[in-house]
Image 1 (cartoon, helix red, strand yellow):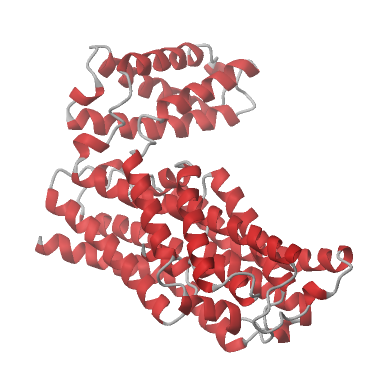
Image 2 (cartoon, one colour):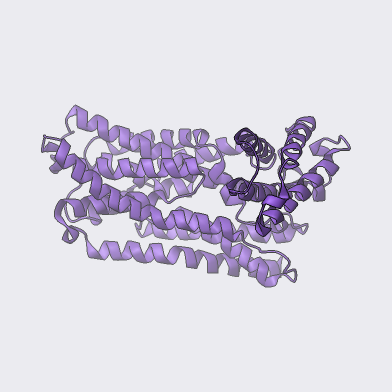
Length: 444
């Protein structure tokens, strides 16, 4: 819910400040489409969140350690989001959540005596970090480009003027802004909503691993069939044609497949497996996907195109054993995100609508910023990457202001405050979350 009311302004600011919708209608409409977006967005981003932490940390047998993990994540994420919302700063909930998760991983590494593995999935963290860094640059530059295109294509100068006080825009402009508002709301739900799903799954796996480590609704015989197909295709790979790193990936792939086969050979259903077996399958499944991805990228791989496609699709089917979320989790997040959008929108709306630029938001600026935000977030969701809706849209508003009257059209004080909040969010979240985890571990 905190994500909803913190990020609500990303969708509703432009339609409110261009008089396209009344505030009450805008937040209700946005809330509905946020909720729809959670259901339609899949779970790729959610799984990226859960895979930031290693299975060993999530499946700690000490329930108090797991409680320490959950409290550290929730307190850090909620406190920072609530603080920046109160100050009216459009700060990234994505940075806060991801920083909190990394902080817990580093905190666990600090107190742990087992250094045989990394407590943060740095490969996944780097992918996510890159998407978060690039998104505001894309929002800023593409908004400038889109404003230029509009000036060249649209003959009517009306969309480049400030809206008349309390007067709605012409129908076609109103429709355009309503569509862009809907697009941002939907894409926000499909991306940010998945982060909520990922956080809930982290909590469920940590607290009740016996029920949520694996998707227990999967049929064991179907899983064995997929394992068999993967084994058959992998056995066709000629190791002599691979380089040293690729041979290692092949060896690891064969090892993970053999592990699956040995566990499933008994015919036991997934629900009847011991917790350590479920944990082993989850860990091996994550690693199998990584190694197969490496092999499929190799130019030395002597498989036909059809076998490559089949191998990828079969591994994707296998990954559905661990990459899932119960429908009730998705429903809970969609309702809380939609409700949150309807509650606390006003503080951030004022910042985005009045304080980023020196001029009143025009129709063209609002449409450009939201169109860029909706498309950027939509592509990121499709790629399975979490991206900051706040960063993209705020940067888009800034870009549209610069496109109108140059850099002097930005309010330096507001931009400085937002920039400081953006820069501090990730390191502060990491430090606070890690410190809380160490503290809670010592007292619980």
